[in-house]
Image 1: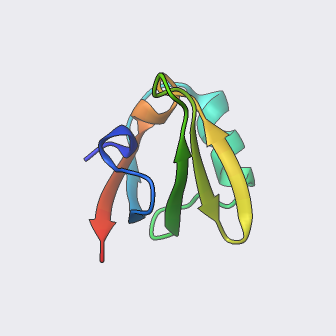
Image 2: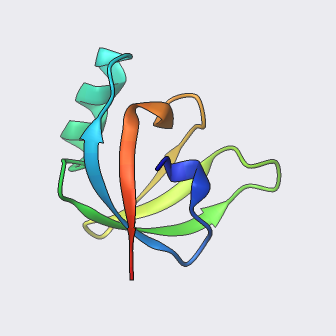
Amino acid sequence: MLLKDLTPGSKGRVVSFNAGLPEYRRRLLALGVLPGTQFDVTRIAPLGDPIEIKVRGSYISVRKEEIKILNVEKIS
């Protein structure tokens, strides 16, 4: 599942990273987005880009093109 498939208020967990954009992967890792990390989808912009998530107490805005490298799962 991709992050863009979740709705505001959803909770998810990072499962793995796909290949591509190694510099963006390093940036996400530096911000604490690691496999197994839980997050909340807080907001999605009107046109769907960017998506704001809350990870470990920090709010991160991620663009649609960049989040294709994240595999996530929805948790309840």
